Image (cartoon, rainbow, N blue to C red; front, side, top):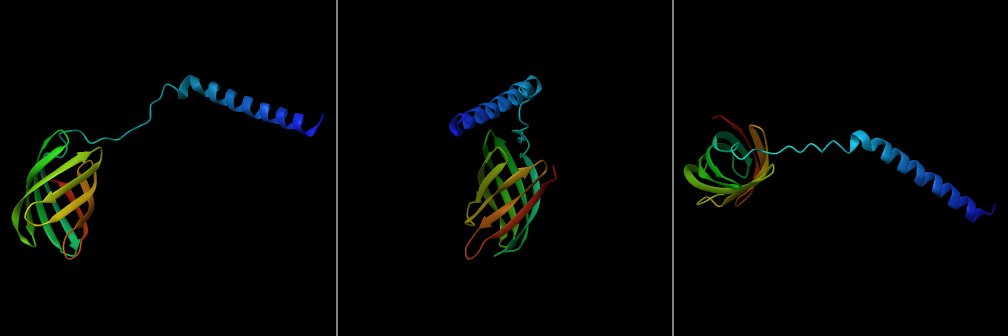
Length: 134
């Protein structure tokens, strides 16, 4: 047998083995869907307590209301001190929001009753984290 026929024979056997393994596993594998962790629509509504460090350091209390992917509420910062309006969005586990009047924008992720990420502000940003308290 010449070398090109031998290669075709080996390739045919390899493809057959893959098909057998794929079809053979299909009895149970095809019935299972991938696990996707999602944040439920009402998960973010409520009060969150957190901290931030970097360009500014301090604590905050965030009060959210939620309508679908839209977030609105207030954030009380320790530095710069004050309570500010906040608006944002959540998509899956990704969260983005901004504090009106402060000029800070926050991005991060949510997992259950915790969320964390980074923030951008002038002159420098940093990191933040929070836990849901109610």
